[in-house]
Length: 105
Image (tube, rainbow, N blue to C red; front, side, top):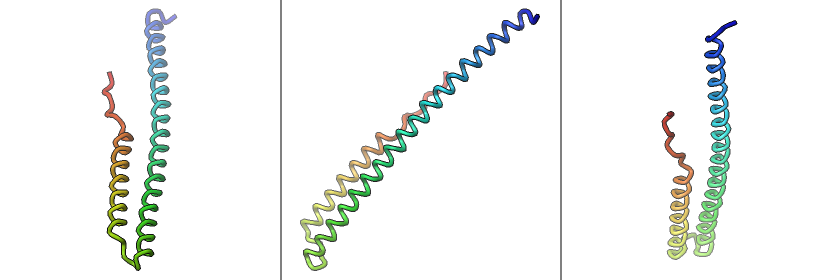
């Protein structure tokens, strides 16, 4: 009935179906990656909050033990703890950074 045009139309429909399937597959991969990223960010946030709370508790304990002042040794330990936290946050943030997108072919 449509002759040669029907073959072209059928080929175009198959190509469109293939492209649509690729888009859906990529969408699922992206959504999964976003879920993984959200979970990693939530964990980092929780871990960071716990570390900061521990540092604050150490400061308060030192003040209580030293009549309102923080002992120099305690201060050095707390600074070292916070520097380690900073290093951890930097490393984990770098690990969470998504790779640059690849150009479409």
